[in-house]
Image: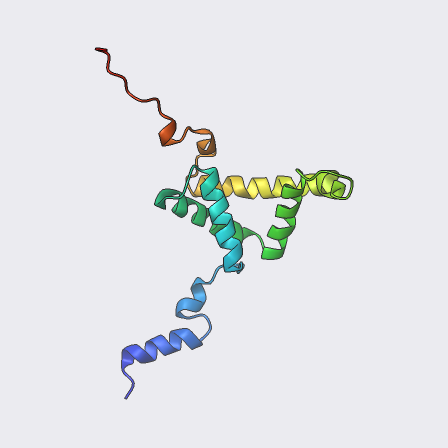
Length: 139
């Protein structure tokens, strides 16, 4: 005989609008894309630790709540394409579509940084091992 608890779990899993179904993100991004974003973000914030992991995971969640994955890929392509050299990627560097795309992604990332308590100047901070060594004043 199925217990009441098991019945509730089954109902939550299979009945739309109940339980876990209500907690799905607005836009589902592939796990690989989320992981790539988080690793890149952590590197920009100074390294891999739980603090940067939390902040960067929060950031991609915010982005995913506000952009479809296809829109994110398009905006990110224009952002990365700004650095591309040569004639062919010119469309990624110039024109109103390119500028608007970069601006829109920058705005969403800025809002994500505010929400997720990311210090946007953290990437410029010196690493811990860059701190000058203490010297003995008696020598």
